[in-house]
Image 1 (cartoon, rainbow, N blue to C red):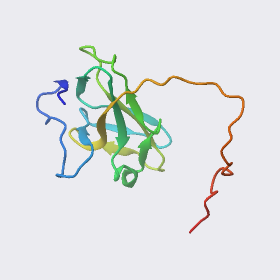
Image 2: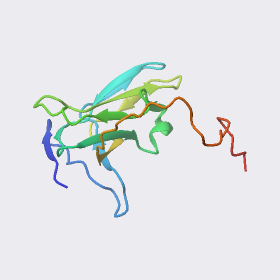
Image 3: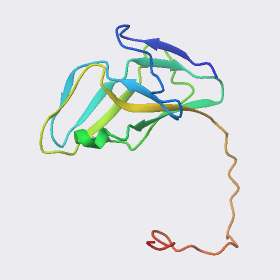
Image 4: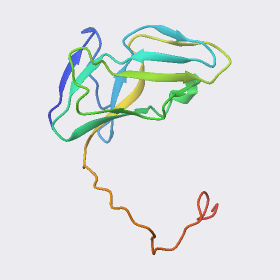
Length: 143
C-alpha cells in the first residue's frame, strides 16, 4: 500500500517500523515541549497523510509511553480518509498523569500509527437477540 506523506520538519526521519515484525510505524514529536502535571499537551507529529481510498489511520500509544507518566488523552486517535489537507498535521493529545512536569524532546517517539482498510457498516435494527447473554465485565472469570 502506498501512502502520500508530507513532513513539516525535514530534519526528522520518516515514520518507520522499528523491527521486521512491527505492526505499526513510529511517529516523532516535531517540537521540544513540556506537559504540566494533570494537563493535556498537544504534540505535533510532523506528518500530514493522504491514505488510499477506503482507508484510515489509527494512532496508539507506544508501549513505553506510560513510563514517562503520559497516556493518550483520547485512548486512540483516528485519522479519517478525508483528513488529508496540506496543513492537516497529525497531533497526539497526551495526558500527564504524574505529579511532575514531563519534557518531550524533538524527535522523540511517543505514538505509532497503523493504516487500515475501512469497511462501511450497514446497521440492522433488531428488537431482540437470540444468543446467550455473557454477563458483562469479567464474565469469563479471572484465570
